[in-house]
Length: 54
Image (cartoon, rainbow, N blue to C red):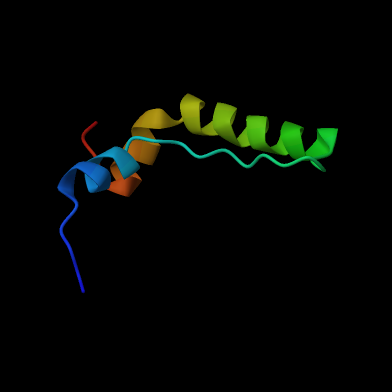
C-alpha cells in the first residue's frame, strides 16, 4: 500500500542526517566536516545543481 506523506517529504528535504557511530575515527569526522564546510562555501552552486530555491 502506498500512502502520501507530504509533511514527511518536505521535512526530509530540510534535514541533514550525519553519519555517527561508536567506531568513527577522527579522520572520518574530519572528512565529514570538510565536506560540510565545502558545501557551505559553495552553497549557491549546490542549490543550483540540486534545483532548489531554498
